[in-house]
Structures are given as structure tokens and as C-alpha cells.
Length: 290
Picture 1 (cartoon, rainbow, N blue to C red):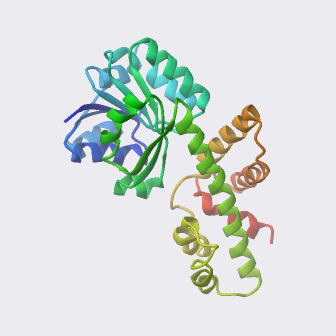
Picture 2: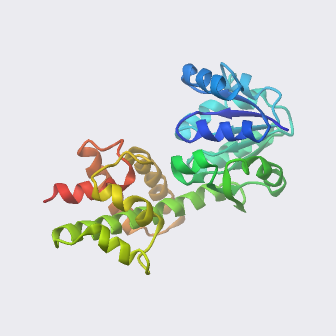
Picture 3: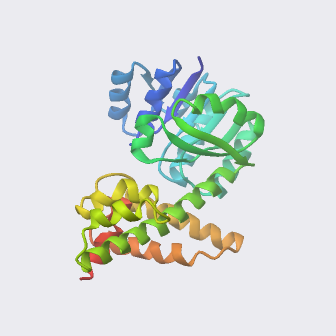
């Protein structure tokens, strides 16, 4: 059993922290909205803390799943940050999708304090978090990863170290780049089927068994046909992630023309009032065009 702090109880973090309790760990949680941390503690039997420092105090591991670069800095740094509560040899595991730049900054800050820092962004959506079946892509020192991996296993279907600090975040960018193109392609296929007077369900039943098949097709086509978009990762968060991808592409001299285009399509969805719709709502943009 390990003593663990979990920082951030959103749609992903809340069930992830619960899986750690089920695995037998001693878990203390922190959330910016205190009432949510209290509700988690009531439901799972763990404890909650008033600050990240308090949550992290005396812990072997701290896991974080917050919103963005600034949120991550705020829970790590400062007199109330988690780093201030950790002893040398502790391991900080960040599940947030952030820039590789902030990851490397915090890795250096942690290293100066004798703390290990593993970037470990996740994929699999809310269902993956609830079912303990997330894909976790990691960057950081091998020794720290080897210690963290058995803890992460409580909510992971697959977990792999890709390379040094920042490699996990770079891999998550690959994930989001691939998803953006897949969802746009599926949206266009379903929109075309509608315009052509075809039965979309019958179309997908056939094409999903061939080269066109994907997770997005298998899990989102029905809700897309039904014009229902409350089933996962929100457009606002996807645009945040794609912004990171595009900024990083400039830094590494990569060309992402499709990603840049789909990012603008998601901007159109936001203008339709769909910032909190899930990412499959790209089809709404096509329907709005007539």
C-alpha cells in the first residue's frame, strides 16, 4: 500500500482516485472546489485536504489531473503547492494534458528538490477512467516510471514510458492529432450518407468492418446520427489540446495542415454554442451549413 495524494477531481480524476482506493492505497484528495473533494471522501472513504501541500505531505506519490499549464503550475508551486509538501524521493505523476514546455520546467523544479516528475497524460475518455481502462503515455526517468507504473495500473489498460521528460505529452499530442482527422472524416461520411438518402446505421455496419473502421466510428456513430453530443471530451478542451499541438509543431518544424483546419472547424462549433458538446459534434457544423 502506498500513501498517495490525488489533485483534481474532474470527470477523469474523480474515478481515477477511486480506483486507487479500490487497489488498497491510502488516498488523500485535493480539489479547487472543496465540496467535490468532500463528496469524493464520503463516497470512497479517503480523506480530503485544503491545499495541494497538505494533500501531498508525507506522500510517496502525488497524481494530478487538472486543466491546463497554469492550473498545473498552481498545484505544484508556491507555498501551498504540492512540491512544498513532498520529501526527497517522492514521485509526482502528472496526468494533465499540458505543453511539453511546462512539463520540462516542472521536471527541473522537482529535480532540484529531489522529487521525481513523470508526465503521464491519458486517453480513453470518461468511460476509460470509470472502467479503469485508460491508455497512459509517459515521459521521465526510467527509475521513477518503474516505481509509478504499478500505481498507475489501478486505472490503466496500457501504460508505457515513451522517453525522457516531455515524451508523454508529445505522444498525447500525436493522439489528439490523429483523433481530430478521424472525427472530421467520420462526420463527413455520415453527413454524406444523410445527404445521399442512405441509412447511416446500415452504412456504418458495413464500412466499420473494413479499412474505415475506428474507435470513433464504433463508439460515436450512433450518437452522431441521433444528434446527441453529451458523451465525452468537450470541444473546449479539444481546442486547448490542439492549440498545444499546433504551437509545438511550430517549435519542432512539423506540418499539421489537417489539424489546423479541424481546429478551425471546432472553433465554428464553439460559435454554434457547442463548447461543451463532445468532439464528435463536428457533424453539427456540416448540418448547420445545409
